[in-house]
Image 1 (cartoon, rainbow, N blue to C red):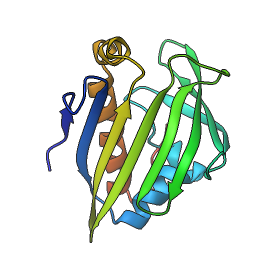
Image 2 (cartoon, one colour; image 1 turned 180 degrees about the horizontal axis):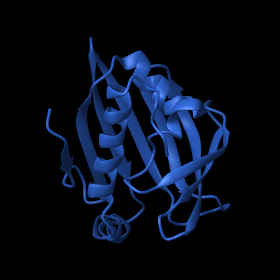
Image 3 (tube, one colour; image 1 turned 120 degrees about the horizontal axis):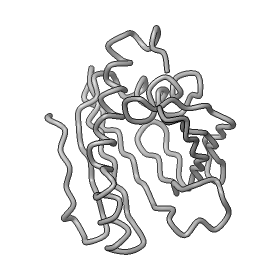
Length: 162
């Protein structure tokens, strides 16, 4: 499956779809284990530092994104639903309480044997928030992130560096 983006399911959504080149259990591990996620999360040029990762309903993933220009972004994911190995649901935003820009994300992982059909569904608070996110480059940056994940799988989930 060629990576696709769909901004029309509703006027507040972005949906990214692709085939990930690993079995579902490995994909799950790549998304939920800090020993793996720091190797591929984020678009090209971005590195991350995992500060804490507690993958359970009510748990948090706290991380810092480091941009090539030296900027740092404190991020927070709050897990709402964790259904291993098929579904993760969470809020994603900055690491501040009551972030008005946080958005709802549903990730699904469909078992296809040696590969996994992956869907990332992002639901924003308003049409304007979704449109600003698209204008910022979220679709391309999301595709870069999932390209990096497939590269991590191709490297055998090792040997990747930030």
